[in-house]
Amino acid sequence: MELEVNDQSYEIQSDGETPLLWVIRDELGLTGTKYGCGVAQCGACSVLVDGVVTRACVTPVDSVIGSRITTIEAIEEDEVGKRVVDKWVEHQVPQCGYCQSGQVMAATSLLKETATPSEEDIAAAMTNLCRCGTYNAISAAIHDLADETKEG
Image (cartoon, rainbow, N blue to C red):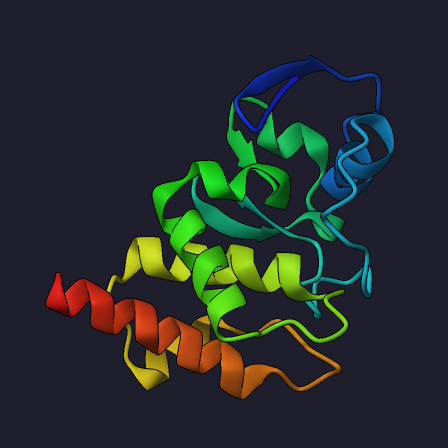
């Protein structure tokens, strides 16, 4: 099977039912996408599939063949993703950082869909878990990005 990840094509050997997360981490060596819970609840494994945030731990690799997959390693090549990362740094969002690759992917997906999200939009989209409790900083960074979009 051929898989497109971060604008590169890879011939993968994994079985089609293998979760995308394990193909990304183990076969491709892209370890920025994290394993959290394994049941699509925490969001640490979030990647973009054709621009939509997707929980890679429960996504069979054969279901994304022909799709464009973006991981945290390439998110700054995306204009919105780069802006999200810059705001994450400006607002000092990460603490331990374990969940933050998934948080950045979720925020990027949200802002690509809704450039100026409301507090309700943010709450609905940002469902990834953070043990450090960086939710206020995440919300502030997203609001800051939305304000820049309104002004620009």
